[in-house]
Image (tube, rainbow, N blue to C red; front, top):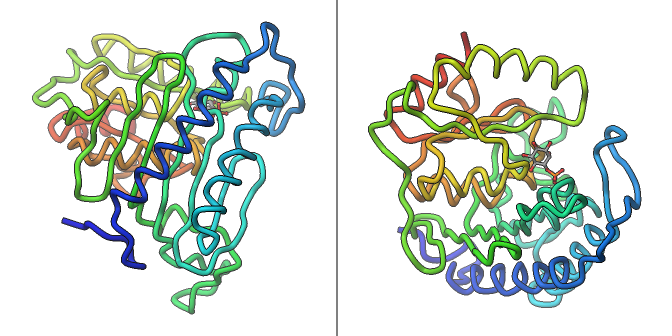
Length: 288
Ligand code: LIP
C-alpha cells in the first residue's frame, strides 16, 4: 500500500491539507453565496459560466496550497497551470457544478487532487524527457490524494492511493452484481449544443435498457455517488481534468472500474465508472 508521496511526505498529511483547504473554500462559496449570483464571464459557450465565487474559491485554494507546499505545481480550472519542481501537481476545481451553484441547486463541490505528474511531454516528443513547464497529462498522471467537499450537503469524500475511499471517515464500496436492466446510471451533458444533440441520442437508446438515469450536474459528485453506491454507474464525455482528478481516485479506491468507452484510460474523450460486473456490459451498450 502506498503511504508516502515520491518526495517522502505521508499521503495522510497531504490528504489533511487537501481536505482542510477544500473545506475552507467550501465555506467561502456556501456561506458567502449571494442571494442572486451573477455571471462574471463565459468560457467555451454562453452557458459555460464563471462566477466571482469560482475565482475567489480558486484564489483561496491556490494561496493555501502554495503557502504549504511552494514546490508543487498547480492546475486550476480558472487560473490555469503553474509549474512546480517536486513532480507533484495540485489539480483543483474551485466550484464543480457551477451552473447548479448559479441557480442555487444544492449540488456543487470543491475538488482538490494531488497527482504525480507522470511527465507531460510536448506533442510529438514520444518518449523524450517530460517538460516540467507543461501541465501534467491526465493520460499519464497518478492521483495520490483526492478530496471532494460538498458544502451544501455537508459531505466530504476522501481517498489516498491504496488507502481506500471514505465518506466522513466511513469506508466506501461500489454496488456489485448489478444487471444492466437494474442499473441506476448517472450522466452529464456538454456546454456545446452539437455535442448535447449527440448525447441526447445516446440517452434515448440507453434509457429503455437501464433502471433509470440521473443528471446531477456535477461530475465529481457523480463519481462519488458511484463510490458510495448511490448510483450504479456514471458516464460522460467532455469532462475537464479538474472535474475528475480527485473523484476518479475516490471511485477507484471504492472498487469502481474507471475507463474510457473503449476500455482505455478515462479522460476528456470519455469516462465510464461502474462496478466490475456492470462496467463491461454498460460499456458495450454505450459503444453500440
Ligand atoms: C460540469 C461537470 C458536469 C458536466 C457539466 C460541467 P463545471 O463542470 O461537473 O458533470 O455535465 O457540463 O462540465 O463546469 O461545473 O466545473
